[in-house]
Length: 197
Image (cartoon, rainbow, N blue to C red; front, side, top):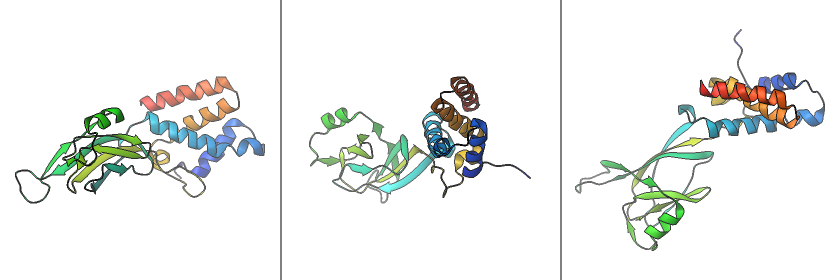
């Protein structure tokens, strides 16, 4: 029978590796798994963590909510009419800029036009300038944190495709907490080697 990684098998494996049975330590296993998942999401920009969304901009509103579990924007395109043809038959990239650039470039939010730039407005929002004058179609891609493992989510992309990286990241967190720095260094090396492969 083939072995596969789930939240339960990962939790049980961590318990065996750390060789601890006290409740105070075992209660931290979900935390170590979550910290490992988040670290992998930051370090590993791969197709399995890349998501695409399509939508429509709201005219006269330059604020867009970021998707849940958004981590980093990869690309942003706006569709527009070209040569007065019907439909949005052309697409062009809009470019990422710092918030201060956006506010200096387009200080009057009552003026509208074809969007050229976007940037982080708050952690969970983007600002697009010029403020859209039409309901332009958008296509964007972003890297996300996968659905985090817990008692209700037993598998995700990492358990299916990168179980070695997930195990190494979670054990590195565990041994750092337990102040067993030699094992933490060992698992850090395993994590780095798996990440590079």
